[in-house]
Length: 170
Image (cartoon, rainbow, N blue to C red; front, top):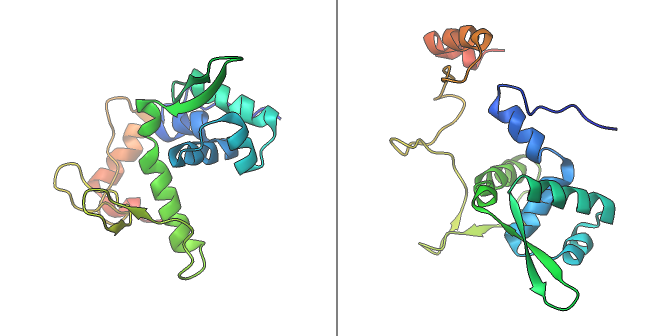
């Protein structure tokens, strides 16, 4: 079943989901971040069909998230490497993992932890303000219309910026 495309929606979340929103896509990217870069290794590690893996890798390559690089000269074989665009998806994966660790993992049974190379300590990812470094969460931010917001969104977002509590209300 073909799903609808979000590529033309004036929403960054929708357009991002159009690119990386398929189930397998984020798992493929996770494995490539972990260093699993060859087709058969990805297929075996994920238990994914050849057809689905081929389709997802082609899409990620077409979207310049991955690049194919040869690793074998005779009967050329390729591995998949992250581009700068692909590397910029790491925070997305880290935050998804962080949420899953908090809400879905058994207590004290987090499957993967990350170590910050600079300090050598295990770390938990956070989203922080690019201006002051303070942690961002649903209680201390609100949306405001940007230069690409369609007119109907500007009205809704203006209400949220005038009354930031609206952002949290149901």
